[in-house]
Image (tube, rainbow, N blue to C red):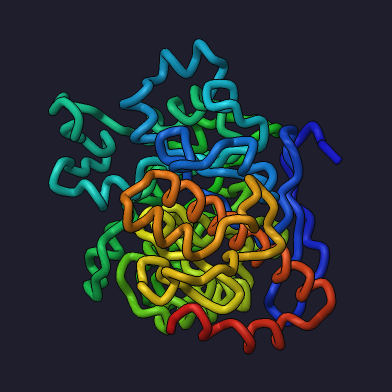
Length: 372
């Protein structure tokens, strides 16, 4: 059921694991939800029609990269990214905060201005302020926008993390002012604080005081151990509003997702399904499979006999192994599509088990499978 305004409904819980539904004018998003990453307006190697068939409800685009190519003016001519890439479901956009960290050698942070980049494409000076980030996301016509934040690299230096909270809080205020009032779209705040409980609570408290439509846990999945990520989620998700969606940015493997759902997280995104697909790594209900391995050279079985999208269940592991060995691009396309299908089936089973109050059993069965 489509609604005219953005809203979130918490349907039920199994301990801390939450079953919910996000409503947007472009469609519903069942949570916990996984968002395939379409950084440049494309989920690499996958047709949008096929994404729909995998039961993908929402994808992610990237503000910084889309600002550079195809650019704001071009996106405006199309009325946003949806028509430009032929995707009529919801889109969430990263604010560019991750690029402040990942491209740190190409930018400098100024609290009053924002991030001053040297373009990785042509070397031109680019200013990404909180206001500019929101303006770009509006040009993209995102359904869920993110505030611009400073996402520090993994560190135990509390001074660095405290400064990032200060910068991110001030930028969050400016982002909200630029966003204005729009009930059809949502603006999410992004918490920082690394692996320190007190800093996380401080960041959450400040953002809740400002008030957002959803809250993201930023500054995680940046190289810390999985157990440490789970620990900080366990210690701090209870301080997030229960009536707003919770988003763990840049996560992750199936076991990352399981552990975070256990701690009350609702939304995820990661390049893992397609990046792994391009290297011959498939995710299945038996665990991870490296299709480059010679033991699959004569394996007649499909990756998943139940997946008939693009007739994937008719392609054998032997054939996929052959495509990889032959350096054929079809290998990347087929395995990437399979991986997204698997992720969405995985999320579907998570939701079913939360609804049936059997999530704990499902969690125990699969939490360690994908780390082997």
